[in-house]
Image 1 (tube, one colour):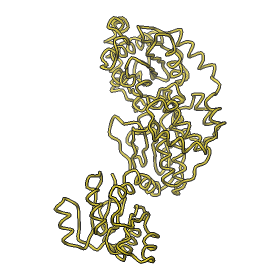
Image 2 (tube, helix red, strand yellow):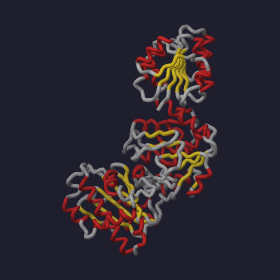
Image 3 (cartoon, one colour):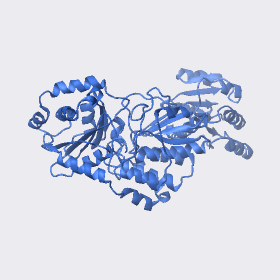
Image 4 (cartoon, rainbow, N blue to C red):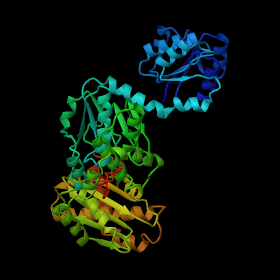
Length: 536
């Protein structure tokens, strides 16, 4: 929330105070006019009779100030108030009215102190508010936090980062450097999706793979493209966070010194482009190329959850981006392991109506799940796919859908949130389910248990979804796929072993080259490089 301090309250000040009354955030007015102060108080405005030109008065406030509005009608008072504001609140945005009939020297002095000036009392309130609104204040608040971090900043992506997460971290590192804050791009997990690896290698991206104890080396922590420590990363859940920037709405409250969560854009990279532009920070080819690719992947080349802001960000980046590298990143070679995984997914498929489910035994690359789910969706008459496998004591699922009105992200949440974590987009999503004590079972028994639990819960969730069309899954299909003997008991067993199941993850760990969104609430599972369980 933006905290605003109004110094003096002449004609312009009164216009602004009236308009700011409907805006989120606090407004405090300091004014020497006792009658004006009483009038403001009667309108439930926090007003004090005080000299707005005294630095001691401005410093004696109980909270940080984001915006200072200097709004007396007297030019000399405004110059003195602006000077005091700059001295006591150096990181605040100062908007100053030059006053009525200022001399040229006075106007020049005020303009040299303030970030923006108003020269006419008739300026529309809406125009003034645009200059001091939330959009303009976020970059300044981020800058202030970065400048106060004592020691290096760890910019932590979600596990197995996808292009959007990597690009956002690179851009935040650039902003931190401009603010005088040393920073490193960090991640847990692995980067296995071929497009993600190509992006890192071709752009020569410096990233540090963290071990749990490494975080103690840093003086500050930033999260990008995910919003909760311990959820889709391996940080302790109680880790204090300094900066948090994400475009996925969290399913639980989040805390940080600086928070920017905006779900009305298609990529976190878009938010970072806004910061770079508003702070006037020069962008190089590496950062521009990464950000452009991050936007393209998370919006599926501007076909999914895209906004006009995403288009504007891409247009801004295009002149700086390296198109040759982008082409190479988008057409990397596929590993033999990934091809074999897709082949096993095809062989192991079980089809019920328009829904296809496939279990991958001997899974080595989580990213391959997302790519298999995408490939299987191309089979004739298939509208929904779910591909799953086990790695290191965790079941990873990747889902896709098209047509039929089914929201796969909500479906996986309904199916698996009680025993793990899940979520994503309407057309692509993922889940992570810890095996717990079941991990000790022999391979044959474990395979059967997992098969029953996944099918039972997945088809049950489809049946219960209000957005599913009858053609997507019939009652007969669900009964046939989910009615295996002992499914209920098996489901209960998994719940018992997994506890409430999050295992420090909000299922935001599926990141393929383009889907780190499923992961937000689920791993990120996207056949795109950023939608693999955690590599997207």
